[in-house]
Length: 99
Image (cartoon, rainbow, N blue to C red; front, side, top):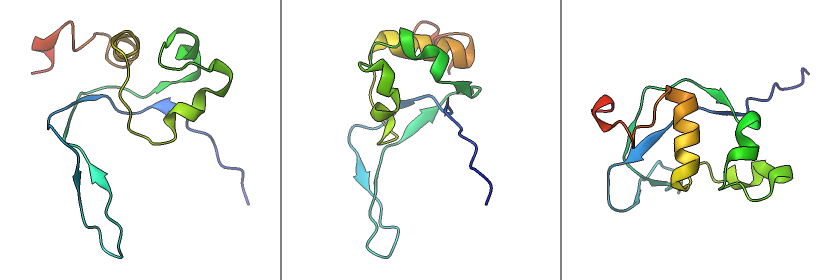
């Protein structure tokens, strides 16, 4: 059995477009919560080089812990650092490019 290759990257970035989470019945008693997201066109980028500069990651040595749920809200500074690396601009600062 081959060892799985790690893919530790930011893979998507977007803006929540609804007010509240909602549940979807996927069958077999699986009912995950969802949010409607407007995803931006962005490239996948490695997480590790950004860890020291991201304020939402408090424990830099155990940085993966904050990602355990897959969907999280982050502070403005972290968002701008990530978006500038994924898209070469910040959608918050340059809204007309996102529309």
